[in-house]
View: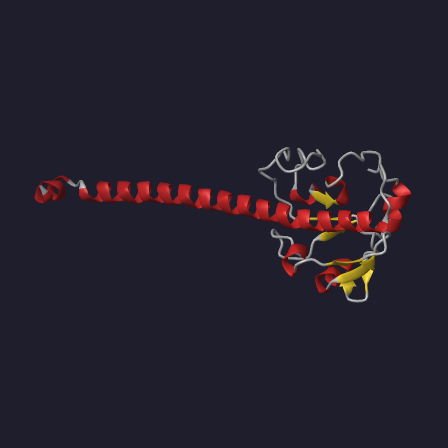
Length: 186
């Protein structure tokens, strides 16, 4: 059989076909690996951003005697300043920050070092400021420019603040995600 294939010139076309098929299969594997990696980074971004949002929401609850809906003044007076002697407030929160709550107790606010890093850029999250101020921290955002796969956050948040965003940099993890009832503060 081998002699017949060599005599008729089929060996080279068969080898070329095998190489082409292998290349196509490797390309598909590479694309699926890239997609899986992007989805992993998305999940990590959500996990880390949620930690920042939760910490800020807990700070607001600690600083106010909430009996109903928070007013914009209560929220503004509860937020940390973005600048710190150690860099940004995120740097300071990695070391831990002790605050006295309204009810008289003290609470330590702390973030894991990796919770301050954007998984897409490997740099610190961008700080999100409330409307009308540059000096207060209301959340964190990615500086990634890619288009997200995830378009709906119904399974994660009651809020629609992150839904249908076109870029990762539009995903802003603010304390508002933890209390979606307050829509008037945007």
